[in-house]
Every structure is written in C-alpha cells, then in structure tokens.
Length: 220
Image (cartoon, rainbow, N blue to C red):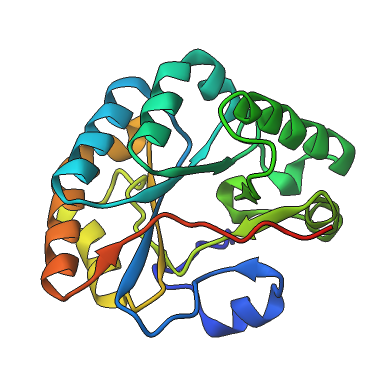
C-alpha cells in the first residue's frame, strides 16, 4: 500500500519530523504560497502573471535542470519579488537514491541557483515527493539549508481531480502561517488555471495576504 499525503499535514507527522518547516508560526493572516518543479516555460509565465494580478508573493522550489533550460524565467521570478529554493537537480526521490548521490544532486542544483542569488542569502530546500532519508536530512541541515515541507497540499498534480477539488483541498485547510504547495509543471496546468485564481481571491476575501518565504541568515 502506497502512502499518500493528506491535503493537510497531520500533527503526528510534524512531531515525527522536527527540524522541518511545515508552517510559519504567526497570528497574522499571512499565507505562504509555494510552487514546485519549475520553471516550466508557459506555465511559469502564467503563474507569475496570476500572482501579479492578485498582488501575491510566493516561493518557487526549482529543479536545477529546469533552471539551466530557462534562466530568463528564474530572473523573472526574482524580479517580481519572489524567492527561490532548491528542489534537487533532477527531481530525485530520496527514498530511492543513495545518500552520496542525492547530496551531489542537491549541490548541483544549488550551483545552478547561485548564478542568480547573493552568496549570503539563506538556502531553502524542499525534497521532491516530500521523501528524505534520515541521513540525507542530517547532511542537508549540516550544509546550512532550511528544509521546507508544507501545511497544505493542493494535489493539483493529480489529474483525476478537477479545479473544484483542488480548491476544496486548500481553502478550508488554510490557517495563518500555512505553507501551501502548488506545482509549476504540466500535470498541474489543467486544474491550476481555474483553481489558483479562485484560491487567491477567496483567501484574500478572508483577509489573508500572500508573502514569500524568507529565513534569517544563519550566523556562523
């Protein structure tokens, strides 16, 4: 039986995985939008335009191979005031990858990102599929990364779901400080085109504002 993440990350899982960010502690009506897997050409451009229309900032966890293919999109993401993080060079599954190979892949992605980021900017990492072995987790933390998971999973990548299902996964499960996950990939394109504008509009109507993830620089 395969484990499938629920739309809202349960409390027991957060306790099992200390040292990861599932949400940001705040009482303010702030939501943290995140987009995984990009940048993917036209879909990324559409996401950026949608965010502009709703005065929303977000964080993009980028695949290094896509960064090398679309550097102009990475520049557009940063010019719009969003932040970027590491999603491995080739979207690796940590459970299926030897730790030394996984860490090399993470660092290859960071090398691609470093062409766009100041050296002193804190590093963010999100494991593809949310899958990370304990040894990988410890090594990535030692390398100075903030490991970002999520509070709410849209499941926009599930092609059996309609836009309404994606909205129902997100809107009722969102709380102050929630980290929401969407995808900048072709699987998500169908549902996200209708779901994302509605989600942004309805959350804004509830008083939420949308900010990019930023962590203070670690002191050596």
